[in-house]
Length: 478
Image 1 (cartoon, rainbow, N blue to C red):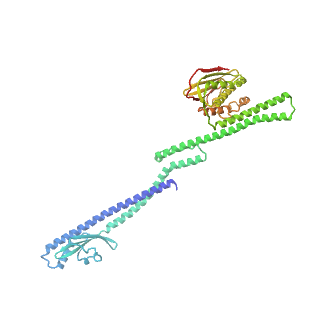
Image 2 (tube, rainbow, N blue to C red):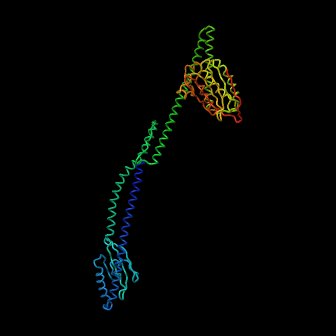
Image 3 (cartoon, rainbow, N blue to C red):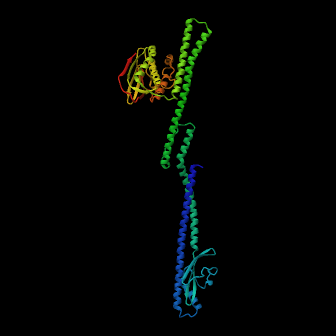
């Protein structure tokens, strides 16, 4: 059952029940009060007659000598004092009274006592009041009967009228409840429709906040929560799509990077196998096979390093920055000679916590990338200094620089700003990815500042050792 119909039926039941019970109690209260007033009036009337008869009998005792004559005179007097009222008065023994002959209602009454009850006869209602008094020498029962059928008729009439009123109220309330239940549940229907749209893949679907009679704090908060959830779902889906796209790009790029050296290796190996060649040509083919094989080996090792770094933890040790700088200088001599680039070292001496081999790999790759981006004869600078509570390494070049659009993607695997230039230099787009993973393992990330045509500045930080002490800077140039 829909929520709007649940609201309708529950509210309708509450309204009709409350209205019906309230009306019944009201009619019953009016009926009870009216009936009690009529009973009190009947008792007063009976008391008035009995009192008048007692006085009449006392005043006429000397005149009337027998009981029968006195009784006849008293009855006449009773009718006279009853006047034009609806009460009917009877005087006599208990068996002579109209309503009392068949039961024991009046039996056992004491003198000067009074009883009353409601009786029915021929579908009419009466108040029967009986009093017992001492009249001259004998006791006498005085009965008054008041017709109260109109009280019951009025109650039945009011109940009938109220039934029609209740039916009218039910119809009117049902119409209003249908309208209001639809209005109140409209925001929930919108939420349901929006959730269906999101389930179909329309992740930019949002719910407008309700206003007017349908608005409430709860509905507004629910709409806001729904929109927040939709924002999160949309962002998460976009991240999944981006991750899937990056994975597809990674596989495509990796396949391409493997295919290029393998094609060269297979082609030149087939030439050596199939043709007789001059010694010079054979050396060239062998040299190309060696270079492409070395490139394939480096690509595989770099990829392995990238996978291992994403799923491993490192064990750091205390190491001096001047030792790191000296070891890095020795390891990049071949690169500097190959590209004709000078390296300047300006490293502040300190002790840091790092994994030595990974830190050297990180600095080696950054310097290698800086050399590839720089023209022959241009300098590359390695700087190190204490930055607040950490130690910062920075590699700076004055090469071609990186465009702003490429900065956010430069650390992705296989991403290369200039693919033809990178491949001609033996690159596969994994260097900065590995560097960024190493920096993450040391609690940092690569911070890249670059401007096209002016150069690039790439830095990262590592933790200072607890016993680190500043000393003279380590400077060198090669």
